[in-house]
Amino acid sequence: MDDSLTNRDYFNSVAENWDNIVNHDRVKIHEILTMTGVKEGDFVLDVGTGTGVLIPFLHERIKDTGRIVAVDVADKMIEVAKKKYGYPNVSYVVGDARHIDLEAGSFDLVICYSMFPHFGDKRDAVKKLSRYLKRGGRFVIAHSQSRQAINRLHRDAAKEVRNDRLPDAGILKGFYSDAGLETIHITDNEEMFVVVGQKR
Image (tube, rainbow, N blue to C red; front, side):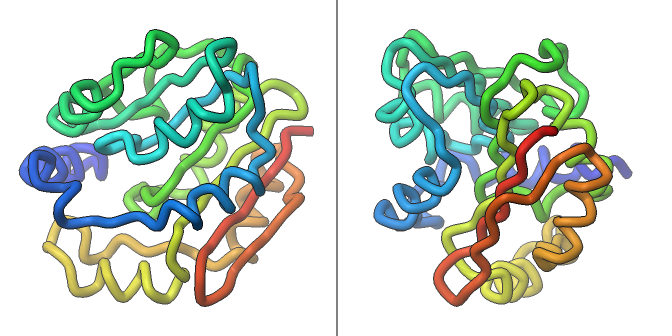
């Protein structure tokens, strides 16, 4: 089965209660976004936005002159995010970000925050998502926990996500290279996992 379909059903089933189940460290999110270099006026693709955890933090940085496209396969997650954040420069899209109608070469930042393990073919995901970037744009895979903690969490989770794993930074660096991205930053420690690539 297509991984996006399996994940959609699972995340729809937990959407209403998701913000009570999962907590994100605000300080770490700010640190991660500093690493991405996101700034005022940027055009951002938030892949797997979920209930919109990143949206207020991104909006604070891009201001009113930037734009966010928040995408998720789970329509119930998007419904929750829309209720929480109605900024006029945020667009919500239900779908698989790898296969939606977005203009190639139009984004300054594509960020996969706390969601990348849920892609089945991860090399293909990097390749397809990076095509949305402008030259010099940044592609980011980030978690506000360690890679080991994320993989333990999924191993002990519901069957739909039990086999979803976050590859190590070396593997992601290879995926980035294959997609025409230069890896410009890696943080891989007990606090967080962040890999930033820049489109050549």
